Length: 351
Ligand code: NAI
Ligand code: MG
Image 1 (cartoon, rainbow, N blue to C red):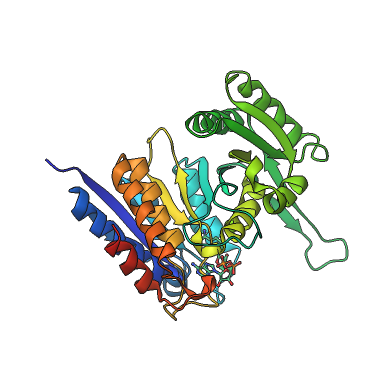
Image 2 (image 1 turned 90 degrees about the vertical axis):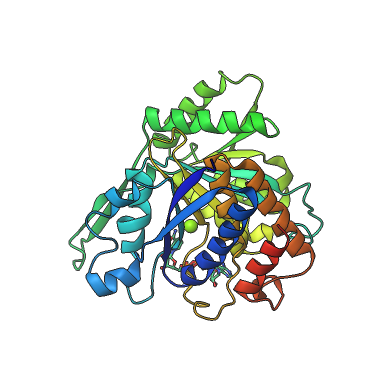
């Protein structure tokens, strides 16, 4: 009997409506090849849904997606909708309600692509950002007081719990064991002397349980420079929600385009479905033109299949992307002229 996976597909907004269908076409092809079944159901949630219905997803939306094995997602946000809502009402909500506390964001150079970093090759650019995905700076606990007054002020409180830090640390060290056995804690504890000093302390405690894994600490300012000057020093980066968000875009940039980055919002215990999405947003500036790069979305499909246990299929997708990039089937962000669907078709042909 072939295995069957139920996938909730959420295009979201903007280029999500182009790159998610491209990714789904690759998923259908790989399922055929590896003889497993993918049952997909589409949910038209996001800022577009909000414009029509005043809400990003129906009241029972969270209950609905809990029934699936995974969520395959594009991005949410539209210029005409208050941009404080997409994360609060969709992305962070799914990530926290479904305890997807790991944001797994790999960075590597695809075959045939040159990094904007002169002289850096695929040997130098190959690491993973593990972003803490449930707490930290993005818990959205704060308030704006007297906004129109001269004495107006606003707060956002970061939250770092021992439980939250320990679990992301264990995940990072265990991942490092499967890679090149090195963990770098990207922090700023020299100035955030309470929250991030505690973050460091708990990670250091956990590191003692992994004496075989090299462990070091680097401040976020230095880490940003090192992404550009010496990315080869990184293997697994463990960092906070905000820092991981920013560093992921820098990671996308050194790969050659934001459109290349894939990711997983992962609940490692599989108590809840995990969600797989590219690292970027809905890119309204290029939406509707069939020019968005779908590779980050397709990579996210591979990460999803790996999480579901279809490792060979996942590897096959990665090889097919490499073949397509080395053959020069590239969208405009990479200096090519291929359309979104041209790239998806090339990947399917190369499976
Ligand atoms: P963005 O990531 O959407 O776009 C930044 C730049 O990268 C733009 O110039 C865009 O054209 C380009 N880009 C992004 N993805 C691309 C792709 N696949 N191919 C080619 N070029 C690509 O970030 P921005 O402009 O800051 O945000 C736009 C909207 O997306 C906002 O509403 C924001 O809130 C939302 N957003 C949503 C996220 C999510 O749903 N997880 C994550 C980040 C932003
Ligand atoms: Mg981001």
